[in-house]
Image 1 (tube, rainbow, N blue to C red):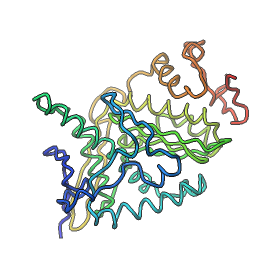
Image 2 (image 1 turned 60 degrees about the horizontal axis):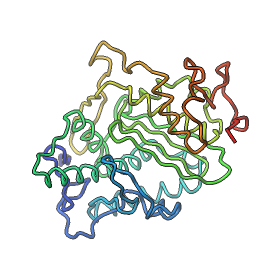
Image 3 (image 1 turned 90 degrees about the horizontal axis):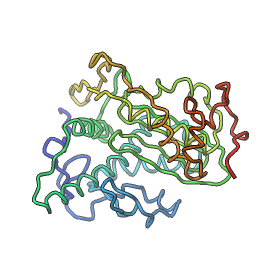
Image 4 (image 1 turned 90 degrees about the vertical axis):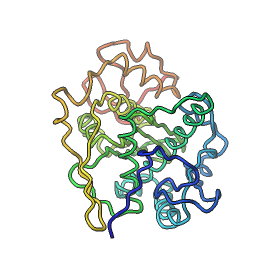
Length: 329
């Protein structure tokens, strides 16, 4: 039997009457899941904490939901959540051994859930104004591909060649269990820090951000990071993914009961470099935002405009051990 893929972006179908993953008509309004899993919200008391949306309005973590059929939940979502929960609550040694595809599916489901809610809000707001909802074709392309790849939860999908994402797990040397979550929907960038680990993901870059930061990743390797060091790595990835200037294309070949997805070469799309020029001033503004918990200000980061402050590397470009990080008092 040929694989049937659901393509909500073709008709902009974001109805709560259809399962977000399969498109099947739901039998009840009770068929829905939390975008942020219950176990995560319980662990960090997130239920009523504010969550800022793209239009600057505020929601809460628990208010973000996705329509989901009972079958998809039972067969795909619940087993994935159980596996992720066990690993995440155990810490770094368990998380680092999770298959990368599982991390992609879990992160992708959460990011898509936020995206689904953002789109619905945008459509409702435009309708209330009597205006047509306009969606950039580049975003339709990018988000549609994310949804396609997310269907690996329920369909036999094989990723051939370069994987479509960069995902890295880091060990964090934290004195207390701090929870920190970030996402940038337009670039599909994600980070989370909890327990003794942190994860950074660029969900549709074909691995290029990890290559771009190969030098720093090699120096860090499996060494534990101070929380401020992890946030610096996050700032570098979030900024570089903003500079990434390609819209990846994929060859999608359904064959019998399996779909094969292969990333097409990025360099073939243009003669210019894959990333726009790195500007230290802009990067420093990103870094200041990531270092807010420690009160590091922009003028301190840019004391030397050619070499922004770093807690990862010393003046000789060598890795700084976590216990040598000297934060402002």
